Length: 326
Image (tube, rainbow, N blue to C red; front, side, top):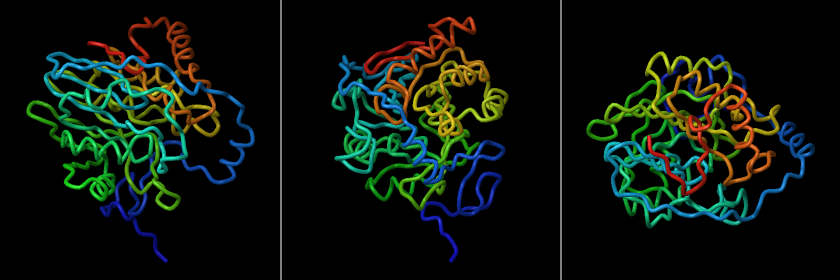
């Protein structure tokens, strides 16, 4: 019996075989049951705090320059030239299809949902539950009705659950208008996708290069480093970002995670490959997804920057509720 893709039907490309997407020329991200059982068997008992205090920010309604506010995990509020965007918005208590099980938030969102400024657009990188949170998207639709921009196939999931959602889906390399004077390029990431056990790699994953008022902001979503070719190609095609929003957490054990999640040292390599003016660390300290201690990503980032002679202020790890202007 032939396998059908319930989310996307399109022409075969160098990264889509007619049913599933893949990362051409990069390490295989698929992991089987035996790999998962080995991970669970060998996993150290690294304890996270059950609660981390957060001082929530109350953002300005609009910002003329470029301001980044950390909400938590991969959710950041990007305010640039009067435009308000959210990346991978998650306000739910768990990164899970279940309300009573799965990774639980240890740090409250850095911005209370009621304190959000008007949200014009959402950049949604892929369909994993710690990035595509239906409950949050429904709340955003009810209160803000933003434009949601996402890689191919994720639009099917969003439209199924969020009535009336404005969604634009694009392939790697596509350009999508965000607002007057602003557009985003959908760019590759070394990752994978699934919402269940039978739909692995049936929607596309990716990142975004956002252009607005002469500024260039890169949001990586989830990614491994792989060969590094995609990041060098981005630098060649789009130029050097003013700011790169880069993941630094969920990386241990490396034998399991390295193909899909960078560690802090690899995040620094991405910043260097892109020749980014500055970087903001994300994807750490909110949901315990892997084996490292909560503070390990920030500590390893600091050590990696020092070892390379890079000023700490060039790659910062904001806590939920903290803000940086560029």
